Image (cartoon, rainbow, N blue to C red; front, side):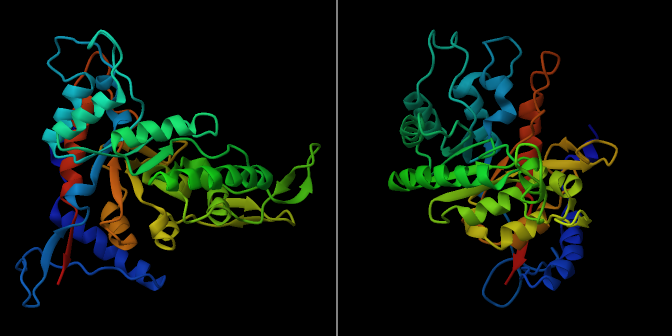
Length: 363
């Protein structure tokens, strides 16, 4: 990997956000001003001061990114393995929050499986906070999952899967009914229930036009599936985690639909506006970066944060509410396999440093 690309530069950050300001401002959404790093810091004398765009306490990682080392058996590679060693290393890198992707490690570490209470002790010992989880969300096991979440001290409980894989309104309606009920249960326990998107969730509903042999619509009114779900779920009890990478993949892939009359229509998905219009429904984000590559099916190649083309400065600055929003770094393909067992933690290091360099300038 090119060393020169492993860190964001202040010039790159400011240039990118300045270019975005006019377009976002034209949409009627306020954009916080940025300024020159040459201007002095701090004080109440009207001068600009520099502040982290993502507060340190809200910088997290989903353990799926380092799943190879969480689940690794003890080895002589010198790379941390298991919850105790990996979480200690992540704390050393600077991460303050952990989003879980399972609660198991290699049984040979303890001679048995670790318990949620033991994981909580490891979190506490390293000054880490659990901010969420990707687990199965269903009526049968939800109480058990809430128990685990509370043991770990979470404020959010969620899933990495869409509420339904269907393209039809009736199935999203049924999913909304379930999620509204489970969301109420989570609220009573002091948690927020959330769902995480992949690109298909921001594809178009089939909700209009001629019916197929099964009686299902074959065309679209132009409503996107997850945006329909926003309106069907109770904002007091159902929340969302935007995966920023997959949202930009959706922008690349899902821009054309067939309207009720059979005409092809264009509609460009905008991840920033989707959040900015309902910013308090998105407590969590996957800060996952991508390098543009129109020759691939997704339009982007996943890379460590700061090494791609996604403008995180523009994104987080525009949506506002920095104390409410929590950014969890993720890279689905971070594990390097037996040939490079340290790759996922190395990517975590690069990504944290680049996340911490995102800066906002204000008076």
